[in-house]
Image (tube, rainbow, N blue to C red; front, side):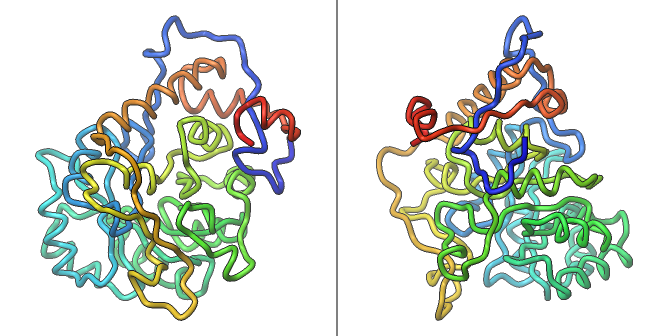
Length: 316
């Protein structure tokens, strides 16, 4: 089905003949990103606490250290504080001007970097990706984003990115679409990038409210999802409010592209949130007649919902 103009609440996946004896047998790992679970925490100040990053990495996802107002030495210190024994280390968000060579010389375990740019389909972002990968090659694994079109994804892949973050404006605290008038519905964005033969992993960033949204993102072509607001509600996040990197709280923009949300209700341990989401995805794999996330994508059949269908599905 053509997913143009559609997002998570506009569709359902058609159930397929199940092949698993138990949903516990579903493989939801992502070998291309070295993940046991397809969860990556958003590199946002209200999410990226040391405890959350460390715990998520221990559970098989990956935490990302945020870059806002941090020097190279700050990022190294945060990396060392969040590093676990063995090869499970946090990822590190960087901007256009961070000196990656200095960081990996100081701390050779630093390898996974996230070029965290609001609009990465830009000459500056592509030049930065090309420059880093041409000089450092396999010394680093470079995730670049964000983009929301196949042209943007193809440009970053051609520049040398190892993975791409997809999403312009779907986050719960993001107001880019209201402020600028630009954006792409998240399901369309994922499908548009995945359907043109991109050969590197796709990370769907933003708009995730439940495990059903994650299943739809993965079925549309994402390899993993980046989560902000759901993880901000964990005990480990430790904040009283959730806000994005383009918010006034972080950078004082005259036209900020983010808002602040107060964290309401009781907090949960991160482990409880992650387990609930993971079991939901395993159930989704089972309903999809699949044994893995790859088969989930291959088997996906989409149903476009009417207003009545959304109400019946409790999505309205």
